Length: 67
Length: 285
Ligand SMILES: Cc1ncc(C[n+]2csc(CCOP(=O)(O)OP(=O)(O)O)c2C)c(N)n1
Ligand code: SF4
Ligand code: SF4
Ligand code: SF4
Image (cartoon, rainbow over all chains, first blue to last red; front, side):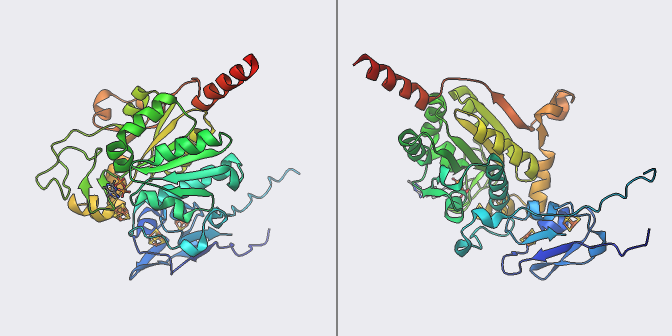
């Protein structure tokens, strides 16, 4: 099979809703996320396993993983 | 084909919370890291799983940070009086037994000022789902100790550590007659979703005690580093799923709260009992 480029997930962050609690960053099993000031940001998308734990534990409807 | 099929790439389809939210009311007022938001999300996923129409659901609360929940969700909703959510809910359910009534209440709301309503609701076994957001403090009014604050904990009203033994909401619900009693935490959010779903589907009073965190008051007063730290210590390390509890030696269970469904029995339900009397008397006429 041709080595198709690995399809990466799309992590959508709502910056207006994120309150910077860092729960998603702390519990991400593969260290994909980081805090940038008071808002979460994606640091290493390749490592994302699409486990959705960040979304499940975000209290603020501020992060979701698509694709 | 002899060649094994290529493993399908996992695709993530997140839950569409907007279906059940009032977008113009968001973002919510809860503090950064407040567990109430995590519990709200588990509640919405559980409701979605039931398949009930939005119009067949009524979410009712008292007063407190947790009790702000009905303001954010697109069901029939009522934000009532401190401690009295269960009285309003009893009225709504009694007037329209077809509604699925879900009560959202803080541990102060449910067990302190609303304690009497709590025990008598359970005693009647009226078909309500009662979600107690147990953050061991009065969040809304500035971090006073509540009926679930552990002994020795700091609060604005216990500067030398609380000297009051706490209530166990599950033991209280069971002793008062509730036919479904369970516990969950915000940390174990998928397990919580399942538990809330089971609670809604159960006929009778279903109480779910949900341990979550108030980082602003309980957290700061008790020297927790962050919301994450609270979730790890209070929700993850200090609880055990009831199914694993049998396998653990007693010393591993000491001081820990059990999660999962703790009590589930069949028992006559209040509205049905009333309905049967009405029918009987109508026939006799
Ligand atoms: C009759 C009455 N007494 C007292 C108050 C003040 N009051 C508002 S919320 C609250 C306690 C809230 O604590 P809890 O129910 O545990 O909810 P939380 O804010 O922690 O989610 C109190 C005492 C009130 N609003 N009404
Ligand atoms: S989906 Fe899982 S792996 Fe990906 S960012 Fe979220 S928590 Fe991390
Ligand atoms: S959990 Fe939610 S609110 Fe907290 S930092 Fe992550 S995205 Fe922001
Ligand atoms: S005061 Fe506590 S309970 Fe209230 S919103 Fe803030 S963190 Fe949540």
